Amino acid sequence: MTTREILLVSAVTQSTESVVSLLKYLGKPIDSLPQIVDLRGVILVLNNKQDAFYVTTATSCSCPAACYRPGQRCKHQRKHFPQGDKPVSMASVEILPLAGKWAGGFNGPVDPESIKAKEGCEKGA
Image: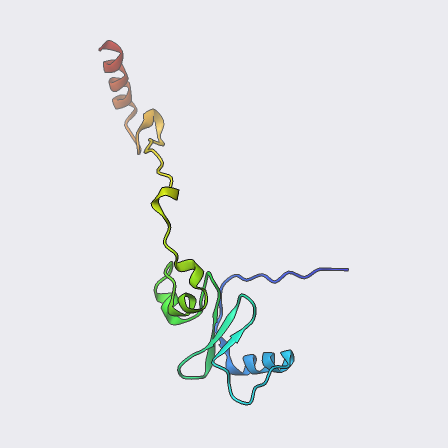
């Protein structure tokens, strides 16, 4: 027996025709176009022009606002997935010490002669 996995890469806006055929397949009523279709973790939201459905998840949305403001939650995500809006307490944030990542503990390309001169001053002091 083979198993199938659903891979969600990013949300893609769906046409009303595709959502209507999905609703027919699921056996849900389609007399009037629903404003919201809940698919367990994926919400389809009818846009204002009523010609497409935005696909909204807790991490992404296909609406224009989500495209124009990457990294910020759009109104669809805030409405249907409010658990992500809880503020993070500062006690749980770990502050990492700053350390140089280049040779000699410096933070960028350095002339090797200046490193030797600094080492020489420290040894002689």
